[in-house]
Length: 277
Length: 277
Image (cartoon, rainbow over all chains, first blue to last red; front, side, top):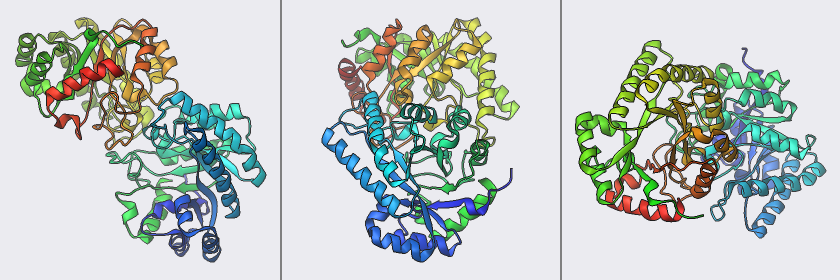
């Protein structure tokens, strides 16, 4: 299988977290010839919308993807409604920054009310309630199932099969798509089949690698090529459905890559892109 | 729902690892009034079969369960065949110690050949090859799917649904059953349905808890009551199928419980058993 077109490379801002703020991250990408990123919400909040817009314009880096919205599992109705309002604001921010896709997580299992079915029902209901806001701005929400090991922390939705079931029920393919994250889903033998089933729903494709000795359930993702995931095979499954969108490298790595020189990180990703993505 | 009959409590030896060897672990259980355990292979190996048999007889503790066999994913045929031989020896050991059930894992994804489908095919094939040895001794193998976060380290089989599919194909319910481990499976919304589907296949029921802030992918299991898992609800699902077997507490906790006084650990389990299991 051939390496992908270099134009399809997108590097998530969060991959440069800790050594870069919002502005430095896009400058670093631009000087290394990468002109697509995904916004990381906390980095945006730290500088504000106005500075962020200028940084994107000045660097020439586009931000077609916004991470992340959602977090709709709170059992307390006041907290739940506050999350809905916050999401509507996030959708507007994303549109303002030129993003076409808002990666959307369910949120994790509320420890004050650890009933998985109830948490999933609330997230499903919250997602349905956000569709009008997304439709109004023209951005698409891309629901992202995450690894079962973050069911407590981040997502009560853990497989692409379950995400496809939700989209079947919500029947809103114009506004609601899916995110496929190889790190979250690689272990699932149904992945190939569920990617085929998802088809044109797939709006966002995140890649990183699974280190054989994972030291943290969230922040120890590996660089493509350093682990167990066959990202190229997973890309081939997406492309069988007609997918020709961005290949988004998103590495949460408090223990390694976040500590390194950001230019080295970007250069490494570019080299790995040609060999492993 | 009422607490379970105290007679159904089984505490896995491994729960007392680090502060106890094989003999001290069964002595500790006996002096706290717990007379059922599951053998932990490494603890057995450290003392040998003869000493282990005497320790069980002297303490009055029965060992109806043996952990673990399997590990059948090696790509190298010589290593794979060696694993088969080792398993046959383990099955004999288990029978010798009076165990009725041998908990069987597939093994993790071989990092020298990280092809998930191929690794699963080898494990399936290896499992089929072990059935005559199990049948000859009268012990049952109880295939255990593990959490997707240990797909690399321990098990390429991650859901009870996939395990049920394998048992459908192997068609050997006399010799091959299933292990349900709440820690491995709690995140899966299909769990209730797959437990009903498993029915009488369920030979072993392992419980512990999911700490909201998990610090290690293998060795940070929580004490029932300290986390997000509704073990009592999962027990109720098993009992709907007619299950009335042991409730086996198995806590891998290098960061907490393994460091504590073993008598305190056993007393804590007994108290939690009445409230959370």
